[in-house]
Image (cartoon, rainbow, N blue to C red; front, side, top):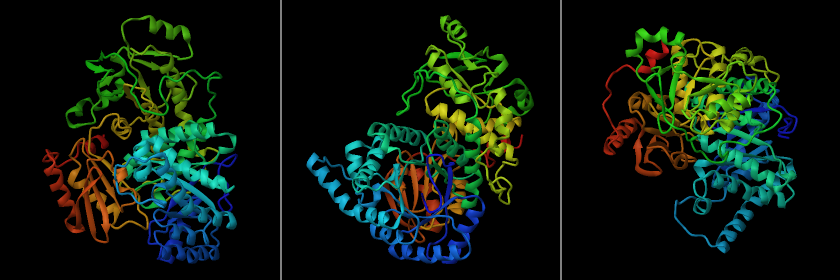
Length: 606
């Protein structure tokens, strides 16, 4: 229980968010919290970076209760155990990050002996025990929230920057809580990389199962630093939606670099979609998986030629369209830039089968000539289940074409808004999406989320060599969605990639305007990955696979990174974007923009 809200067991999947204002601004904090609650947010998180901020939570909570708002409040703690102790006096739940709570990161390479490692764990026990006892005494809940971007030096040196390290970091703290007979806690394993996130949560659940039946603690899901707009919604659906489809997750937060009110309808739509899709009957027997659920590896196939394009093997993931879609854009092919259709479905001799039909599968496998294979549209299975079953039975030499929906699936997904978990309150934009985005209908939000969940999940499993979006009729949106899902899943990088954290009270600059300025300056740098972080909390770690980082170092000051390494310090914010461009030039990754108009705009207008 978090206040009046139950998490886990038979409770519905809970939706959370986080306010973005300064925690010392009591009235703004109250107003933002009420706005989130009225939009359907069931648990609200507020940052408490200092003891002073934590103490002001008393005033915020009192103001909320006086106004009749009883939404549970969570204090977000990273570096200061003293702030956690103060916050626990006033709020229903405290989130701590194991990598930051009792450790200071110096990014040193050390070899810990078993005795030294045990001594470190004892030091953590001394720091963490007082908070556990206080939460136990006051009836507070805890979230043991590991972030891929902030693993301790101890964990990094023993387990590496890996999903296993994330899990072990959380379990160290969970064992301390259990030793004190405290069990009111939730786990999370968040990352900006959906593949890392998915693997970490699966590994966590497997480890909890190994520990025993009494380790069945609730799970909170989230993709950190997802960014903004359509790309952020796609990345969130890949990470959160795929795990919910696997039956993992009791509470979620969609993290957007936008006003947090926009997070709620997206999260509720994901929950409603999952609730509806669970009504489809899965196969009674579970086949062996064709992939390792704890680490990513692309399914190995032979390379073939389809409609003049090479598919499978080490080739790029390809984008397929139906002939009707191709004919609608054929006259504008030269203006589609990076959003071109590559294969016409009807011209590619694609083999359609029901993966439950063993005779049909056997006929394909008996053929020595590799073929592009897909699931028939009339198969009455969930998309993810159907394609996993196909991958498990199909000979490895045959590439697979993924679909976002099957024909029987479209009406159900379109109507997902009315699912049993849906208590969504629409924002002013109608669908929880800023009006500046090219998402004009609620049905497209559901199309986007279901496509990203279904195709993205399979791509992160290593399944798939080409994709077909058939749940969206508008050709421009379908093509853009195809490529953006491939980009978000890390399967095909065709444009600049951005990792951007959501706003919160720790942020040292305006994330939305800064992100817009950085994008305007760098949007043409295909294949370059840029991280935009409001503060240092997850900066270096979440920038692990980014080429360059723009991180708030102090009010009005920015630090620039190359990978995890800070190379420029205390740059005035007014100069920082230009200095970032210079840094990219210094490392040989800058090119001058070829055209002033983004090709994606043309695709979106079709």
